Image 1 (cartoon, rainbow, N blue to C red):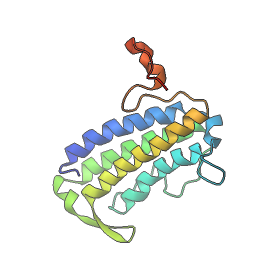
Image 2 (spheres, rainbow, N blue to C red; image 1 turned 60 degrees about the horizontal axis):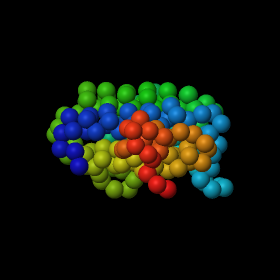
Image 3 (cartoon, rainbow, N blue to C red; image 1 turned 90 degrees about the vertical axis):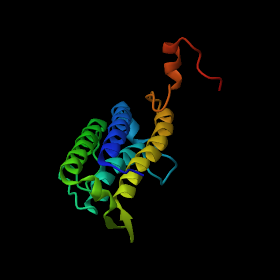
Length: 167
């Protein structure tokens, strides 16, 4: 867990950069790609990542006006990507302005439990990682190129002068 705001900022900058790359790779057509019938679509997963930032942070006293937690799913992949970039940036700016390292030990009511803010921030990062993994599978199923996340995507191996790993 995070012991300083600086640690979170470093992690958030990297993880939100990766999430922005994933978001910008989406197309309007790909938003309807389903996990299975009756489950979240790729668009719904992407929008869930956007709205979960203000939803979680409101429990810690940080109110974000860029996107409301109950905002309707946009029909445009570009609108989702822009909303993500705006809310991820705004959250970080507010947190840096309003919290100190000591704030990380404050416990907030979160889903019927009391979470230390350091834990909330860790969950926020891990939540993104979890849903990005789901999104990358749906992106492949929708015929999209998946950006490199924690290593080369299949299409990236060529730039390293190496063949893609055997399937």
